[in-house]
Each structure stands twice: as C-alpha cells, then as structure tokens.
Picture (cartoon, rainbow, N blue to C red):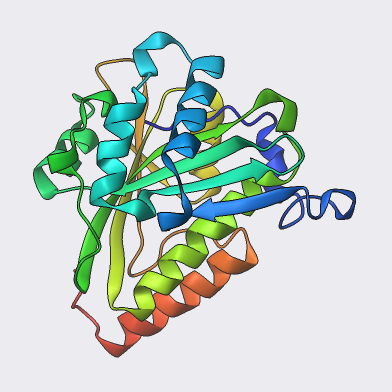
Amino acid sequence: MIKQNYGNANSIHAADGPSSGQKGRFSLISGREVTPEDIREAVELDRLVYDEVYWVDAEQCEKWFAINPDIYVMVKDNDAGKIVAYVNVSPLESECFEMMRSGDFIDTGITENMILGYDKPGLYDVYFSSVVIHPDHRNSGVFRLMLSAVAEKFISLGERGVFVRRVVADAVTEHGEKFCRLLGMHKVRGSGHGSALYEVTMIPPKFRPVTKSRKRLRDLYQRKNDEMPGLFD
C-alpha cells in the first residue's frame, strides 16, 4: 500500500534532487546494488514511521528482492552511511494484482510467488507499494530524486521491450492520496481496511510528467503506443 511519510506533498514540485548544497551527500541505489543490509535499514524506516500492521520483516523483503531486484530504489545518506528513503514498485502476477486492486488484500500478505521478474519482453501490471522517507530528510529533494529514478528504470525496461500497462496503489494516508492524484492516478474504490485504491494507465500514457524523467517516459510510451495502436488494450 502507498504508505508515504514524506512531509508536505508540495515537495513534489521541488528541484529534481537535493539542493546544490547537498550534492554528493545522497546516493541512489537500485537493482542488484541493493544489499541485504540496505533492505534491513529500509525495514527499520517502516518501523520508525508506521504502525505495526504495515510492517513486513526483512526476510520477506529479501525473498521479494530475490525474484526481482528492480523492485527497490533507495537513497543513502553518504554522511551517515544509512538508507534514509526508499520506494518499492513491484510487478505482480495477475491474480494478486486484481486482489490488490479489489481493496480486499493488504500488501503485507504478498509472497514471493506473487512477484514477477522482468525476464522477458511484454506487459506488466505493477503495484506501487511504499514511499518512505526518514522524518529528518523530508522536503530535502530525495522524494523527487526517487521518483525520477523509478521513471529512469521504466525507461530502461522499455528499451528492452518491457512495458508497464497499469499501476495500482493502496493509499492509506492523506499524503498518499495527494501523491496518487499528483501523478494523475484516479480513485478506483475504497478498501475494506479504510484506505483508497488508485490506478493509472501507463500505456497509452495517462500519468502526469511531474519530473523531466517522467516526461521522457511518457514520450517513450506514447511513441510505442502510436507505433502499435491497440496492442496494449
């Protein structure tokens, strides 16, 4: 579920990354660069800012990661040597995706056999799970930095013939709902656990290009849709 804790939602309009005075302080880590220690530190961020009902243990996260290392994008504070922010964006097998979309399933129940790898070209339905930022780093630019990094990852996948068809998110906070709306997602329904399900079509692109990278992603997806109209219906 979208469990953002990133401060003022208007921070999405900040610079593409940290301010010039912070350049060099933060590093992006994704894919196979992510280590088990990084995952454990990301799990500790969950424990710092969320209620226990939303916690997933590090062992389960490592099982997800073993299936698809591209689910995580993390930000490390180089001064502290710690992970201070992360996102989890996971492609799901169709039955699990529809369960998430129904609002009758919480993402803590996702098992590794529900996660897909980007092993071959095709269309994937993706669940935007977590956006977590340490309270000390809110409004620092790391949110937009991660958002751009996810777009760059989708661009790289698209160049290999891997395309995201739909993205669904389970927004459990007011900030989560603002985040979804800022990205052009529309509310599908309420859930049985008091949250709101949001969805956006990626191809043909219905999302908002709120960063330069997302604009490049939108252009790529639009070109692909124009080249092969109807293929992605």
